[in-house]
Structures are given as C-alpha cells and as structure tokens.
Image (cartoon, rainbow, N blue to C red; front, side, top):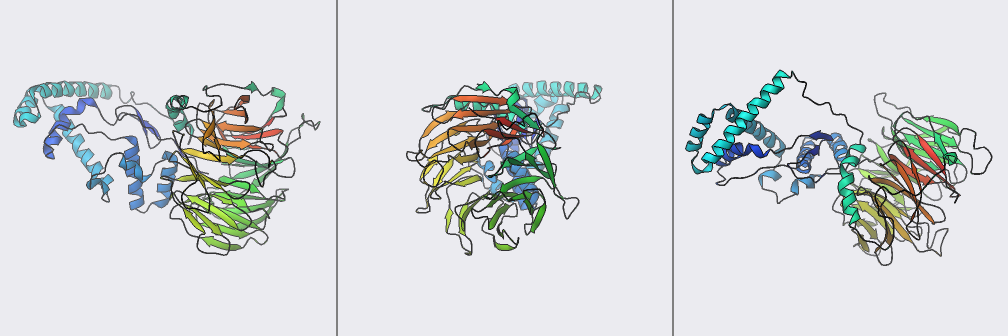
Length: 569
C-alpha cells in the first residue's frame, strides 16, 4: 500500500526533513567567507548565497537511483519521501543540473567546499586578512573579520564536541512511515486550510463531535503489526483485515442489537506463506466479490491469493514480479484485476485463477485499479497517466493525461459514466470517455490528495434520487465535498489535524466518515457538513469502512488493532 509522506517547503535555513530524518540546516549564514572564496573560484564575479532545499536534494537522490538502475530502491524512496524527479526543478535548471551523474558532482563539490571551510577555520585572523588582500574586492576587511569570528567559533565548537566525547550527539528515532511527515505538516496545513472558504462544514482544527459511547466500541486484537486495510463482506457480518504481519484476518462481528455484544468477535487467521522465505509478505490490499463468497488479497511478495469465506486458501496467483498495490473483483465476480509495482496490471480468471491478460502500458508502478463494469477498467500510476482498457483488447480505449504528478487513486461513479482521480499534484480531476480533457479540475487542496470516494447516489446507485457528490481526502488535513455539476467545493470538513488517509460514505449517503493519522475517526452529516460523532484511538488510521447496513464502522490502526464502532443514530 502506498504510504506517501508530505514534502516540507520550509526555508532552507530552517530545520528540514531529508530522507525521513531530521537534519541540521543545509545552509549556515556564517559560511559567507567560504561562499565568497568559492564564488571567486568558479568566476561568478558576485557574492552568491548558495542553498539547497530538502525537496531538491531528495529529487537528486531519486534521479541518481534511477540512473544507476536501482528501480526498487528508487520506488521505495519515492514513496517514503513523496519525491519525484521534478523536485529538482524548483527554479529553472541549469544545463549542468540536467546532466546524468549530477548528484556525484554535487557530493564531490561539497567535499571540496567542506575541506576549504576547514582550512579557513584553521587560519589565524592575520592569515585571513592576508587572504582577503589576495582575494581583492571579493573579500573585504569586514568579511575577513566575520570569517575570523567564524573560525574562532568553529574551533570552540570543535573543542567542546571532542571534550564531550560524543555525548552531544542526539539519538533520533523515526516515528513511522507516515507519522513523521504528519507531525511536520500539521501546523502548516492547518493554517492553509483555515483560510479556505466553503459553503458549509466544520473548519476548526481539533474539533470533536459527540464521543462514541464506550459500550459502543469493540477493539479487535490479534495483528502483530500495522493494519493497513479492512473491508466488510457485502452479505454478512464478516470483516476482513490485512496487516504488515503477513496475515489477513476474518472477524465475525456481532450485529448491533444482536444480543451478543458481550462476546468477543471470532477470528480466523489467513497466513501468507511465501515461495521465498526472505520476501516481505505484508498484506497491502484486499477485496470481497459481490456475492461475499471469495476474498482476494494482494501482498508485497507479488502474489495474489483467493480465499473462501471460511478462510481456506483456494488459489495462489503468480504473475507479478513485484509487490501488488491494488486488486478488485468485477461486478460478476468472474474476473479479478490487480496492479503492481512491476508496472503492469493483470486480469485473472475468477474460477481457474489463470491469467486472462497482462497489460504493460505504464512505465512506472501501478498504484490503483478500478472496474467500470464487467469488462472495462482503469489503471493509474506514478507515471502520471490513467489508462482505460477493455478485456480482450491490447490497446487502451483511452489514455487520460493532465496530472502533473503521481496519480494515487481512481474511482468510477456508480453509473460508470464518470471517472475521478487524485494526485500528488494537489488536484482531483473528473473525466469522461467522451473527451480527452478533464470535465472538472478540483484544485482547492494545498497538499497531495491521497484518496477519494463517490457518494452512493444518482443513477446506478441505491439512492438514485440523491445528488451525486465526490469526497477527497488530503495531506492538508481537510476532507472536501465537491458538486459534480458545477465543479464547486460545497463543504470543507476540517477538524483533523494530520493527514487524512481514508473516507467512506454510509450506504444511505447520510454520513461521511474520515480517518486520519491524528488518531481520530470523525463522522459528518453530508447535508449540513456538521461533525456529529468522534472517536479517538491510540494510533494513526489507515482505512475505515461501513458495514452493509450502515450501523457499524470499522477502522484499522497503526497500533495493530481494528476497532468497530456502533453508529446507529
């Protein structure tokens, strides 16, 4: 499952996040003497303040990994740092920066600059003054005084560090793939979203609805790692969950008012054994067929597996060479579609498990797939493209271009007429196969949009008389509701304080639930935009989903648990 991180846009002299770790500022104002000397060395002719943002550095590293053929490492780095090679283009690139191997040149130059800085720090004030005279007008006496002060300070710091015998070093610990980015972005995204206007919705950060009663909460324990995904069986009170512990689990959950609330939910463990013992088997995605008789799971070892509703393994599907990020059954349940990090999508026969067709249309990993009907489907990728394909045809029916960054998720509306997409470029787009350009470009979010959901309304849905809406969830901590006809944002649901990773409409479309890495589940009235219920767990939330009757809500947490909330209102 893709777990992207927020890119900080802090000033280069502030503390920044590079490679997922906190580092000291990349530029010190006291390095002016070094800059002046180097400016003369490269014949710039003027004094220049050199700086490098964390986004640019991550972009150079990513490009180096691609150039060196480390495709797997490049993808993992891109996911965890939320970086693309376009991050080196914050300003107009110089010819040198666009050449292959620029990171190596940059590192070599940095070592040379650091060596020059050490030499400067070792000079006495008199020697620095002599150097200033030799350097002409580029290093004035005032600059020499500043350099002397800098050298003295550096020597003092070095002496204190050596005498402390390394005690000044701080041991920093990462708080996870997502939470580190969440905390760094919460304050900036909160201020950004507070300035946004909308017709309705609660925008006060940290707001709470009525708390879910304690006797209406059931915590399901058993997983030994983060729980990434969960899905209710469409026909019964059976919940499936997938985790980083290489298992999926089936939970038989008592219904609301069923008289068995005091009993523990029954659990069945679906172990994912790998053909290669050293391979990761994290369960990244899962999906029930419409009949509720089969569960498909996708994992990091590149295998898809099909289980019956009792938890017995029926088939192991082998074709992908790298992790599977998304899989979906079509409506009839006779075809299963999967998308992988190996840049391909595969259609499987639902009965035999044989490969019906493999599509190699994308040039980068496939992040999401979705069926339009029983034979037509869409795929999206980190290559910024969306392909619409039909089973039996090798060429795509359409290729949708318009996003400027990775496309994270795609969803067809209930009628199959409209396709929605969201991207790291901070936009969601609405597409129709009748034209190549998007119908609407939803551009109010301030940070990448991770997921989106259609309301179960309009033609082809269980609520055909209700207006169709689209919900988008972003790293800017907001959930937005969009009117499909006008293309306008009708509600900003802004109580979360950290990135929102999941949203889900209730079956009757009256309520929208959202889950965030601020540990909170919020339930909103879709008509008024008011926050009506809230629950705070003990970890970040990856996924939420309603049961078929709309009176229970499941949420899976980074704290290894799945929580069931009774939501009968």
